[in-house]
Amino acid sequence: MIKKEILIGFLVALLATSAGIFLYSTLFLGDDFMKSLKIAQANDRLGSVMALGALLNFLPFFIFLKKDKIYRARGVILFTILTGVLIALINFNVIGKIL
Image 1: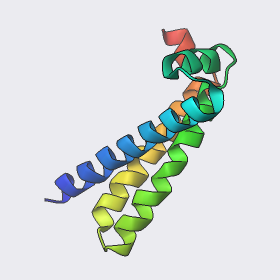
Image 2 (image 1 turned 180 degrees about the vertical axis):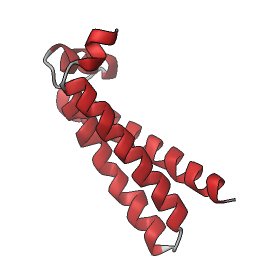
Image 3 (image 1 turned 135 degrees about the vertical axis):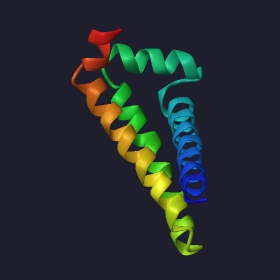
Image 4 (image 1 turned 30 degrees about the horizontal axis):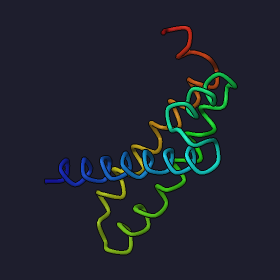
């Protein structure tokens, strides 16, 4: 039961971050989503775009806390921490060396 609640929070954070990246990319970087992500990657700004997209995780996190869904909020935090680790790997070019 608890694992299911954490997974729900994790998936909600995944959707929120994806929506944030999409919104930021289309509104501020250009008209085409994939093109703007490629430009961000070429300019070493992909980590920044991901970090700005992850800001939308505040919304489900505080909603889950308000509704006393603590384990779902933990899932959001878990995804946000993993996103931070991924951003650090991208910024230190560890991902580029692997690929």
